[in-house]
Image (cartoon, rainbow, N blue to C red; front, side):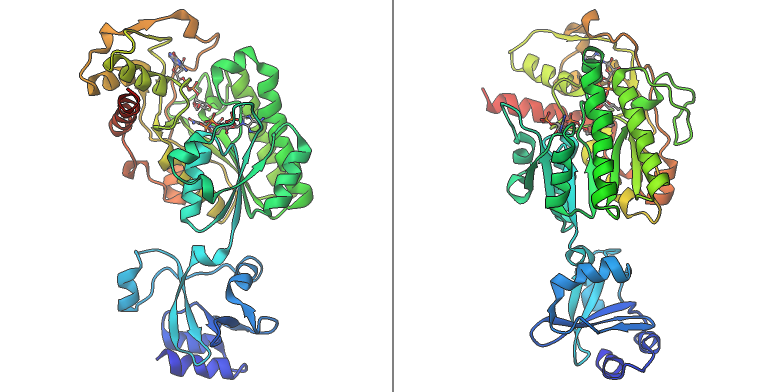
Length: 437
Ligand code: NAP
Ligand code: G4F
């Protein structure tokens, strides 16, 4: 069937392609290749684009075609053999030879040839997002800053360090940001770099503002001047809600930041909105609630607890000192959350989204569960120490992810649960200490 119909319109450009496509009953787009695998044509419904493509390589042209000419892929095919091999809802495009014979399918991710630049590649989210984008076929550029004791331990843990193109960048240095964009020519930038620890922001407010606010302005300016069609993801945060005005918090809930960190991120949030409105940049805020993992930084309360449990269980320590046990957080799994960052940039319109589980737990709950997992009672080991209290606390966070659920099909009900998260982190830290005996 392919042969007959495709031959008709490949050989006769006057033929209406839509008629031929209707005859095939399913194809929205096909790439046509010559014997040597070179792209000689692209068929879409109602159009044929052969001029200028003859003899050029499929891979080099496809990104041009996908980016400039159209953005269209089919969701499913009716070909029984192919369907067996392709998971449902994976985008793929048929490739035919110049005889019109179907010679295979190209996955959308293979074809887009996209580059992504991630700032904060050495951080928790940077590592998981890089892993996610690599699996989607992206060429990933990861920006790291110079430190005297540079560590790529998270990228090594995920075994992806060698697959990432590493670029030095400090968010506070505009030229290094501009340079990273120039080197990577990204279609998507994920700005994850930040001074991300709330407690530190009380002691180093200016540094926090410099990195988180001025740094964000530097990235947006570099995009505006050198690459305005690049899509931009801003790592916004549930800390913006601070002293909450509404329970649960959604995209319309007013902000009331309670730390220099939250204030720095609030300005960055509005910079992102402003560059979208003023210059038409595809810029999105992901308002992510707390997300944790086995590669979470040790200073954050979840990891501090799971590492503390492991230290006590293996006899290295006898107590765990924590601050406010009554604070409530909406905790999810970082690996689940990075998917939402990508989904935001694939959405038709640039918008802001809350990403959360919709459930909340106290720090005490987390500690109780973590100690329980190791067969211990937290009450015997946890000591409250006021030095970990914050001058102004965020008492209760619980997100309403309905918008992401409806528009991005990102569904927290299908993701890692709180109990699974705690277990995973405790098991990991126990293993780390046991292996390190
Ligand atoms: P993280 O583990 O602390 O990672 C932060 C990253 O930023 C690190 O790679 C760090 O590099 C880099 N960085 C810091 N200052 C920099 C500078 N001046 N120039 C370049 N890079 C710099 O944070 P995360 O948990 O992955 O979070 C990622 C982003 O999401 C952050 O912006 C955070 O504020 C935001 N966020 C996180 C959560 C959460 O629960 N995890 C929730 C909402 C929003 P070094 O390794 O050199 O320090
Ligand atoms: O784990 P935390 O330090 O995370 P926090 O402050 O909620 O911030 C994290 O999540 C934000 C998203 O909402 C991100 F934007 C931010 O970058 C970061 O990733 O503290 C959680 C709660 C706080 O209420 C804190 O007071 O735990 C309480 N807590 C009690 N004892 C403690 C401790 N926090 C830490 N870090 N250490 C303690 O000993």
